[in-house]
Length: 156
Image (cartoon, rainbow, N blue to C red; front, side, top):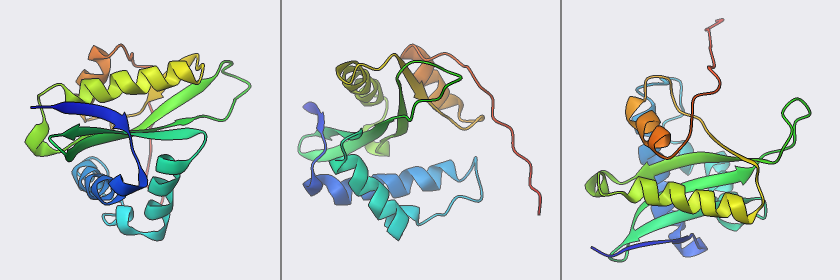
């Protein structure tokens, strides 16, 4: 199996969109109000295109034998006065089910760290659903440590 990690191009859009849809559906077990077809919505299409072509963000793909097997997106965060330093956030990470448990997620995170260093970030962040233990284990193996807990309540 030949794994290539590279920056996404516009030609990868359809594959990234398909995987984004898969990510939304799998995350919906943790967050039932997620818009299930978001990747195909006007906002989803704009977001994915921005990550592929934007200046303060990136989309990195894992290609296995010519097929997009996974991707991650990241962005340079806006500065905040109460947490100094340049922060980048890994926003999405998914590996196609057929290619999981082969180190592809770790390779995508490594490429994200390389990009973060290239843009001279001081800190890298990632967010995960509280009950998504599998994702959290991968992030912890990649040197992320828990920092915040976000709580939510339904008001209507």
